[in-house]
Image (tube, rainbow, N blue to C red; front, top):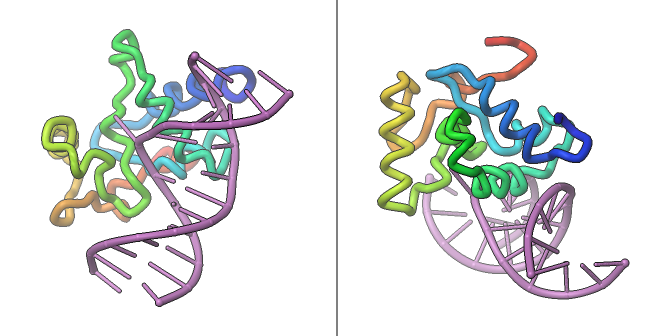
Length: 109
DNA sequence: TCCATGACTCCGC
DNA sequence: CGCGGAGCCATGG
């Protein structure tokens, strides 16, 4: 899992650890699994996320700026925002309040 | 093994 | 503060 022969597996495992009401940036996730700069691959991994992995809260992964990845998508975009708000994620207009909703694995907070 | 793609990020204007 | 371009790295054909 983590690291060897499973970049995507590491992403799924970490995203699955994100508690409700919290979010992480793509770059943060990549760095957390040991591959800083691979933010695009995190999104790519979630894009390839199979239906079986419905246990992975992909909606809790947003951009470093706090804006949603699907901001321009009227279908998935609105759904992601609805899911996050339903979990109690603080929003600042159209973007997430990373200062409060941002979650770091090691801190456990 | 090489080439093309992409749910991103940083930097400059 | 918004827009555009270049850089990055893993995955699939």
